[in-house]
Length: 211
Image (cartoon, rainbow, N blue to C red; front, top):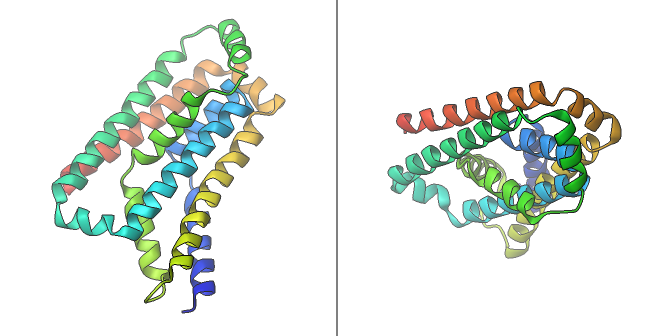
């Protein structure tokens, strides 16, 4: 398999994975709808940086470390799962805020905040399974002896796919109609998002006991 074909295969697999709904999608979608496009894009950038970190780690052999020290992988899954549960609780808790206050808060948060970049990054790296997914995709498509240029192209592609997809999500859900819908149904949207986020976190944490 030549490097061009390998790169196309990796790109296709990662595009499918990025578009699959999960904690990252929920976080970016809610950020864009509640805090505006700029903050949604900051969250998308954080997602891209987190994905890039996992891609580099996978290429350097993080999966080998996980296999050699199973307790480390278990610990990371437990911590990551609990972090997602915490995020879900915070979202659920914020659902109680009156709609009028939410409208004022949205206006105040229209300026970009680095906090959303960090939130995106933390949400991305909270799931160590991402590293396993990348390692599996790379194992399936990487050439036998990839060049340095190819490896750089892979991690650039990972960043572009992850940050690009979530930037599209942020742009779409920060427009007037979706934001208006969010503000009208904020209580139920936040409670649904918080419940789903918490459930995904519990699932990840519970999987830690399975090794």
